[in-house]
Image 1 (spheres, rainbow, N blue to C red):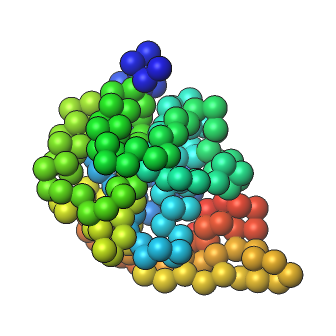
Image 2: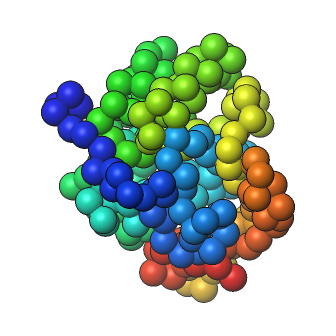
Image 3: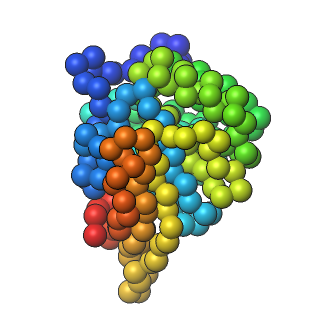
Length: 205
């Protein structure tokens, strides 16, 4: 199936679209084609929600996206975050073949979210980043303190804190994150984002 897909890349556009609040927080208002994004967070801090929310606008505009190495991404939550599930390919348990699965998918989709099951080697990271640049696609690596991405990313979202707002249930979560990376991204600084808000979406505080 992957071989039959091709990125719905608008050749005129060098950016993959993202919805608010990300379009206001990242350089250029979108994800630059050929770049690698890292979402770095301790387990339970909200890293997966942040990574998946980056897929919403692209999938809504007809771009194919993929999620690799996430056992249970929560399809209801993904839909609430604006992700068009008809445009998502899932590879939940690639085990040791996660890098190969992600590389194959980069030939046929515009964005791939990957969660390595353990520490990623420099060689595997370099090959994936080279493939991303070559194909003009986008890699979003979801990492943790005990398994960081081994090479500098073009854009990094580093979650430093989170707290839930509760009434009779868990209504929303405030996430504090530091935006960094190369070039203009290095000057973006710290922000607070509600992900999800009471509707399940991501919004700036």
